[in-house]
Image 1 (cartoon, rainbow, N blue to C red):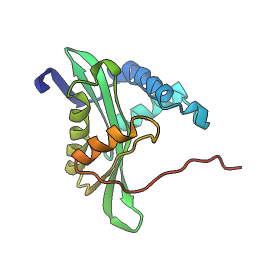
Image 2: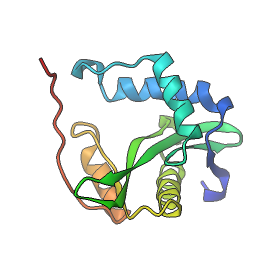
Image 3: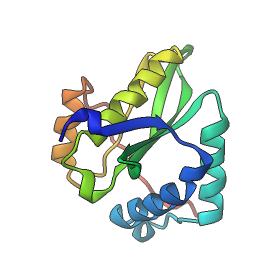
Image 4: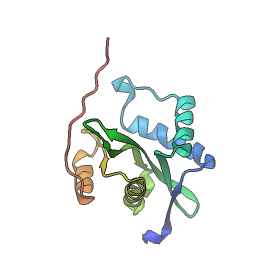
Length: 158
């Protein structure tokens, strides 16, 4: 499939139903319920609005022939050891299964990076779930110029 078949653009209010559906798919795919993390449609919808409205937050969608293919979102934070350095943190990067063999995923990652550079960001943090195609995702990220940085652990307090 030609790259020109895929359009990447900022998310709009009309994308919320597709973003909500893909958020639910991501939640199920990542088996987050088993880790104790929730998917609350109303709160996720509020989060989508803040991503679309904020200067240091973004959400982009990929579409082909007007059909939603996937999305990526992130926000800018300061580096805790030097608040003059900015880091773009990925919230999610998700491509619908039927579009995973297209350029949509790569184009979404490229758009996120380009947006970060426009914001004056120096670094980007992307993540992957260790039990979900971790090696393939790591190869993709390395191809994007990223290198392993840290491991994250999750646990319930109390």
